Image (cartoon, rainbow, N blue to C red; front, top):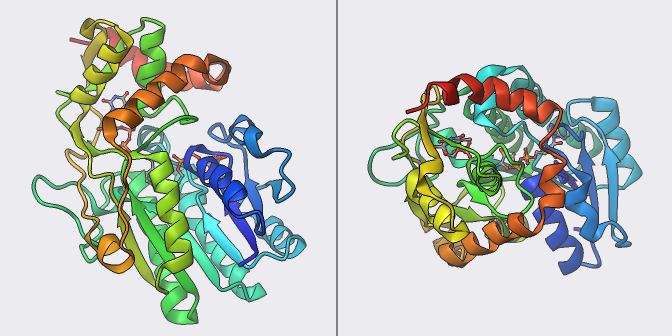
Length: 341
Ligand code: NAD
Ligand code: TYD
């Protein structure tokens, strides 16, 4: 392994992975291919910008000629695919881009790789492909029962990965990570949205009763798990990466408000998300048994570091919260907040 293409490397988790890989493996060349959608941000890559083993290419994973050019130019031998439309609420407002990138884009990457004889392909997926469960934990053999256009598109992409392994013998691996948090996360997801809004003393639109459960995974643990599976994962295998930190949304938000010294009265219960999955929970048993690994960051420590990062880096998020972002915010939240309880 020498020349690794990281698609979606200007996003939240992809950029954490790139920052880690560039430093950890000076002998590897890390090439980012990213369309720079609203969620892609070159500020996330400033720490590696001048490193000799890092390159950036702007482009769409669903555009075959671009993908082929980048794969050939950089003599790529390994692909790690983070590129995706990733926000459930946006997928409910308009699913089109989700099918384009999370299904068609995955296919174009796979097919172009196959034509060029590139055999190593790691795909970053999500626990959301399993759907929701009240009790117990999802394992890798469970059926895929996605409930919204985002998770359905991710499930579609995964099945194409599986087909390229079974049909063409490609050395694929898939990770299904749980809800990830940390620095550089676009402020539309729960934590960065609520932290940055709370810092401005603005209302926090909590969907429904706030008793939904997510399993929180620190971004550095997520990136480290992918690195391990990239090197040691078995061809065709799928691995859960859970944070082992199940929390109710409302408890996570109260913890954050307490850390910032802001009042709980900022929380506004608003109209629920359509098809809102009640609980995600998954087991790391396979990761532990096969590769002897599980995430090791302590939740409260990681939360404090994360919150403090947004406190210290308003230069990063304040310029995002303009233009298109405000349009989305208005569409998603204006009526909800006007009718909040
Ligand atoms: P993100 O939205 O922050 O970043 C996505 C990146 O992909 C952006 O840089 C964007 O510009 C790029 N991109 C989008 N469409 C593209 C296209 N057609 N061609 C090239 N680049 C394109 O997302 P994230 O939170 O960093 O998630 C990364 C991956 O991890 C996604 O595949 C997501 O499904 C998965 N995942 C996310 C979480 C989470 O909690 N955020 C959890 C599990 C899995
Ligand atoms: P989100 O960060 O969108 O991740 P996902 O939908 O992939 O789990 O949401 C996390 C949880 O927070 C989810 O239960 C929905 C809830 N949520 C709110 O209550 N209000 C919000 O404004 C957002 C964005 C999310």
